[in-house]
Image (cartoon, rainbow, N blue to C red):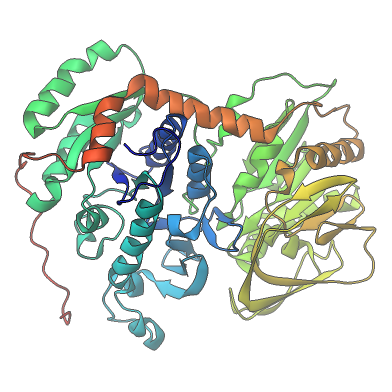
Length: 537
């Protein structure tokens, strides 16, 4: 492969591979990141790619484009700067039925699932203009992939969900639709910890059309516990049934669920929360309760808190669970007004107000910051008009049609801070704050800011936690040497180690360099014929 001497950038298109999965959460993101780190350590100029991502955990690139955080993490694994090319389509759910569509890093509209996946029956006039939008995006997606392959030695693509979602195959741009368009070999990852991995591999393959099956070159078992020799007879039988090898058995490893994608549910698998076992540096621990608000976004913000020895982070949805918390965090959300109503219905709003009156610490980030203000005017996200906030910070918020996407840097609490902003709400700071706090403010023990990622700045995080501990009356002392960046690098190296030590790296290299192998057999019955929707051309 060109670039293994570290030079990169061959004259022709670089190699490629698509990492698909038998299910959502099979480990595609982690495996993609691991392959990127392994190749990067070999001196290969590699980039990650995901054609379409559905996630409320997003990131802002240096050029001001919004992409999935998982792709930003994979870019870090590849040791390259994240770019909108790496995630050309991002869907940010606003409800169970609609999402904001972010194209090449910029929001272009809100669509229902019907409007995006195709078919205009029952859609609004605006949605009918975008009916079948996903199918029309295939050209954009393949152009982005081609540009990455032109400038890199290899591009490791991540699929979404399962490639055997036969109801969506006609408009697929992220799994076999992408692989067919770009002639990419496909490796399918299965989570054996869930059980039924052999049936999942066989069934996934057998539900694909003959043309799609020709691209499926092998399987990767993920999250295996125990003696691998007990698994080997099954792997041989699977090869006999499908004609495809298993290219590795990755052991179960704690603490590798980095930067979750699934924004419709709360994951408690945060990497740092599982992996840090160091005792507190001082005489006491610090308890952090994160309100698990609806449509919670960028809850990865709290990973940096959990990186500190002695800080215990948990997600809560009952007011009683705030009683012993030293810090309550109201996180970001794609539905500020909806989350505010949820807080009130659950009794959490009253509990947070009571904490503030008692001088106990509260931190609001992005949507959480907006909820802490006096008033919200929203004709954009919820179209609810004017809604009263919690009234704990002298702030009025007006939702603008234009989304703020920025990478700010500054100083707070005497420390340098960097972060990123993703929000429609524009905050007007009124008189009455005790002090500024990044782009927000502090009143008593209540802090608010739009900045995501600020707690990853080590000095600032330690200064903030010292303030929290003092307000909470805890003898907690932040460790002086915790580096969040180094912890993340260690995790990415662990992912690279998993691939290097437990996968058939020679076979993976052949697929990336040489493309789809010849002669892969057909596994019946193949995909059923899907009739076109009524009225479709």
